Length: 285
Image (cartoon, rainbow, N blue to C red):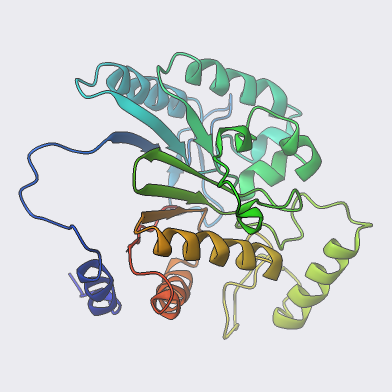
């Protein structure tokens, strides 16, 4: 197996986390992670490139199995992270988006722990951003507020928040489609700006194609962070640094994993001058 080109950077970040001790006898807390359920009441199919089989109906059984195991955990499960693409984009073509989401959320109701949802591209294939803000997939109400630090309160212009499941541990959920043409009102200035930037970076007729691009992340199914969200993110990290908190950052990664991972690590290293207690995890496809 080839060594991750950023493994030395990751090691450096890990070494900078105080209190990391091998052989800890008891975990501080337990949580579950699930991603890319991509449920649809459809026969098996293929991914966009037709290189992998998609088991649309069977994905619900995988979710049921995960929930059963989580509920049987001997250690109390504090929460579950649902990392996006909860239903498949094909639902929109068959006008089955709401019904499929209802079926998946029905299973999550059986879970004996709160669920934090992030949004991926398949959420936006099925629903508008306005719809998601008013749906069960908006779990911003589970976020914590830091008294006397108004700069750590997220704006309603993006879907992001932070919470503390255990003393000195803070989880930050980011909106990876804050800047995107997906799910946006096409008459809005934000959509127009995103489409302009996308076409400047991607001259392909098919905007989902990265063919020939020096920056392959500039495709229609990807997204990015606004400066407003990054400023908020930095304010929360600064607070966590001051208070010696360990931080886990959660968001949705698109398919161009290598390029996004490199950019993500560079972002973490840039922040190292500000934040020392930082745990890096790559969640996504």
